[in-house]
View 1 (tube, rainbow over the protein chains, first blue to last red):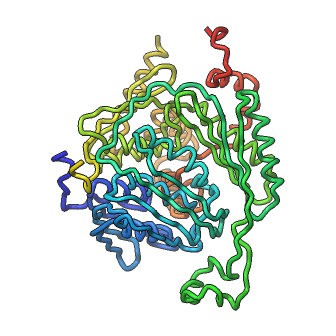
View 2 (cartoon, rainbow over the protein chains, first blue to last red):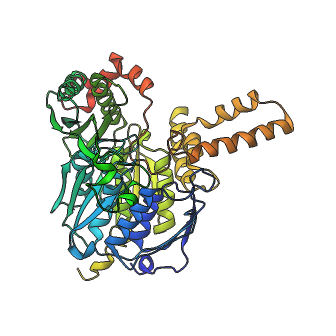
Length: 402
Length: 117
């Protein structure tokens, strides 16, 4: 504990915007200053993107004493994290930029990692350009709720956690609303010892349509079941149908918010359009020992519902084949949580070989930079790897006295 | 025995490779999976000789980086993705085969454990 909690004054330096989100989270958790330069420095649109700014603002409102300095061009960022206070337990509403291309889980993942180490409970409402469906890069809010949050249950973080999808919306211009509640704050998380993933016993899922016919749901579910039913009969996919959102006609255009100056009704001369139209499916396989695998598919342009359902089912099979005691979707969270754990406690998880990708390597390096600890990898049984992580005892700085 | 040795060799390699800062994460994975060498061989075969080769490489690299800066490009792999990248064509081909599906059955509770062993 003593070594880990001494905050060095010299920031850790990185270049480019890759893994910016993970680095910000690790920086906040460990209290280590962060300096990132050359953020999209050769791009036509240099510097941080609006959604990255939004993430920084969100981090700022959830912490106390955070210092952020961004260069004029936005290509250099200095981030000195403060204490995670969770807005002192008060509800917080955070508005995402209207043209946010990332799914809302981009932000929810950050919240889920920070919340256990907050001084008081999290209650965050995200609105504005919220995309609740899956995007090309982020999974849907349903997968987050049914597959990512259970990952934290392995660390005995279970109480008072809720994700409410108040308004559903699909991309590319979302207008949804999600409420994130997290009432289980811990001093130090327990580490994990998982050697066996068990066998898949049931498959659950949510199919969602916003602004399109509910028949799409039925069609997606039918094809997905067609693939999966031969393995387990216990396949149940919920169907969620909602309307498209009605927004001003200039919604998501650059500068439209500033022009309107808070006057939502008079925007774009009162003209409106529909946004967030689309459909998709989230599938989650659960094993007898509580491991979850998840897959997400969202309809591309003019893609048939059958294809989307089939795609999701095949992705799920692939995830099951990759295996491991944690699905790929929760891998980084698990590693971070194990590192945060009691100093000297060794946690082990068994992963499928194919689960080790560039993300894992980059993540392990980032973990070393921030925590000073390495992950050890050794050969397990039948094409698997045992990853062991020694806890660094960073824990919750706001709860020194348990 | 050779295969066994290969296997253990590979994993030892991985734990060393992870923190080898001279390699990018992509290179680590390629090396670990044993995809690295054939690729570099191909490259040297395809490209010409000497200095012009270097020049070509140099220009190529910049091009790639430029592409990397563009968020919409799929090549931008390490930038904060949550979803894994799937090669759908490959997957569909793989999962259309009966043997692949039967192989996966042992990962479900419906598998017949008595028959297996």
